[in-house]
Length: 497
Image 1 (cartoon, rainbow, N blue to C red):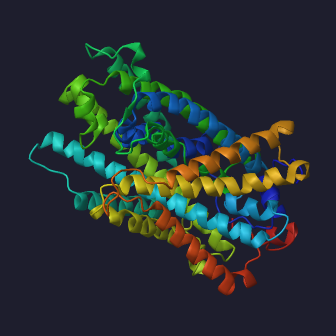
Image 2: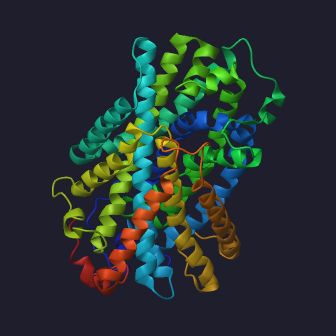
Image 3: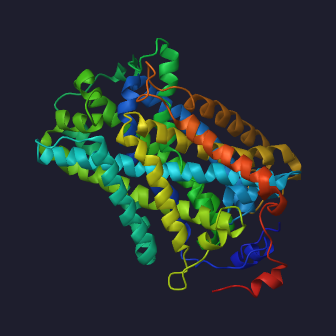
């Protein structure tokens, strides 16, 4: 593909007419991924798990190591995003990069991306519901959080976010811009308060303290599980890719959005992680609390200050969930546009008023709610949903990167590319994706019971089984990968805007 910055010409060359409004500029595209990565949401919601699976050593040094690996994944994805800037993103590029069986590669990538993004929306809002209850309990000590309350609050959050994506699309774009400043100002407020206010901090060597309370005898295994904290935080940066058809100069702004979101989040997240680790006072008591980072804030700062900072955390989570749903919706829209989902005509229809795929919004919300329901009876539901998010998304990331790696010098890059480093960077990215996904499909707590079982492999297996049966039963005869609606001049005439 030629190095073109004409967005419409690039889209038409890929065989698609323009249906969505290009309201995202460089900062907006970066904002969507930065908000979905959301270091405040990711670190606060999974910090407690990390306290039992590796402790400070894994929380700090695991963050550094995984951040570097994710930069490799992001760079490889960014290069592909520059070559194929479309809402179909991962599944579209998989279909274009495959030498053979393009339909199958595209099909499975799309379904992995779908389940991973639904898992991200579900996990983020489930975490927000947990922290909302922690805030309520601080105001009214007689309130006791229950799993059914968490599920119900999550359902309400999903409803509000779906309504926002349906009726106030311009507001959603504004909120995504605001969310960046919310995260940055919130980060400064939390870190500064944790640094200056407590009268006592842990010694410098505390970052090497290791803890394994997972129930497994192997400290190595327990520590590896702790990498889930960082890995989950760094999911969703494909949001910049999915928003390509709504981004100005997408061939350069989408890949830049991916790389900036990852690198800025890596640095800022390390600062926040260190602030929380060195503020720990009563490790056992805080690790066993319903919301460990909230207890750390209370012990270090007092209830009043903790209340204020907790509002920042909850706001960050809600912003993250909203951005997740927006990205999730664009993937559904594109996948349905190519006839790869049940009721495709329904899900890829666009509202004439907002020029957005409204029906896909409600599908994203409903599927996220289905994943949350097991939280009614399972205390490991959150980590299982997180695993679904990490495994689904990173496998979807890995397929087009692997196919690009296999093409080697035959790959035709866009304006933003890695040059001769493209192949080795893609190789490192694929290796990390394989290792991390194997890890997060394994048990996360011992002893294994019905309530502690990691149902992520089952959920993923069900999705893959349905996709496989459907593929061999009928889809392989009608789905050959991304659809081209005609020559560039023909699809240009189909533009709805």
